[in-house]
Image (tube, rainbow, N blue to C red):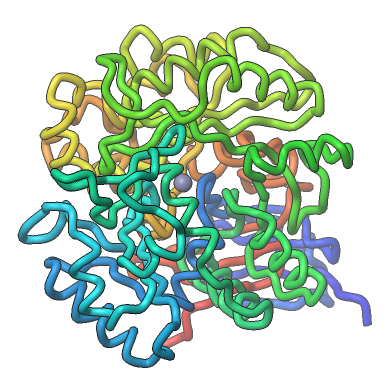
Length: 493
Ligand SMILES: [Zn+2]
């Protein structure tokens, strides 16, 4: 059976989509264009271009469904109680795996130790990623299995926290996490795929039609299986880790390979850590540089040669400057060269105009500002006026692409739009850095589309583009439409 045209009515504006899932007409002419045989879908609310999250971790979201979730807890005691309840269901030597703990939000914000976990988890190996993913809290059994003891040296780009006598405390930062993380058992393919499918469904529910994922081959494999089963609810642009660059080079995979539902775009590399883990690389010399400049330059040259884009994680003003310095050497590497700096949470005023000059996209997550405000005031007191500075970057001509960094923060784009616009004024936190709502929405649509080379296909409601639409009313998202088909709708009351 061939599919005919689809007509979305009752929303403003009305939209007609052709059998190919692309927009025929937007506005009053839609009914005529759809023709008599069209399937009519009745909606209510305003129709916006489909929302795109330019930075999300699908694997992390899926994993969270299969492990103990410690987000939002307000004390060490509460966190340990949840770990204890989870561990009780496991075999005696089973790994307790989890994430989301956040000592900065606890009543006592001191970093916890392995001893807490040893008793809560009954001696089991425990691996708990911190909310920002830049440190892990592990038990004595996990340290033993990972071979980490008093005499173990810190790996390059990482820190093993130690007490006064040099004994590891159970906190592993940045690359030091790897010795333990590689031991953590993985869920089965079937369990993981089910969790991934559920994750995509939830993203459609908050109005997203596309996401740019920052994942490994594990997530990509799962997405390919879902795609083969036509179980994708949102489009995914996959960005691979730097560690896999050599595979892509050897295979000749380029940015844009794939189809409208699942495609490859950039290579993600970490230049520094995070504000919360105190590992953001700052111009004042503090923090951790994770990728030395020579390696960064080499990576960019390799990616440019392979016609792969780059997504450079840089949070501190030092890391951002290094990224810009390295990117300035290659301005027009090839036709779809769209280098991005991910996060850009602190940008020195001298570097703000360089984004537009060099053609670097600022891929930012406004919701971070809401969560980080107090930390920024505490750790970055001299530079908060240039932190989360989307307003300044936009005025200086930088292209913006907004996302959520979920599961670090909520994936709900409405929270991000709010954080980028009216929240700054309402909170009175450097309100001059706020954007208008329309400009924030643009960074979640046209801006994010450009940041993945998709501007001819998505990002606005125009004839010939894919019919990706987010319909919103006063109660929030009313419907999400991807390729002319409803991927989520609120049940009518
Ligand atoms: Zn991220």
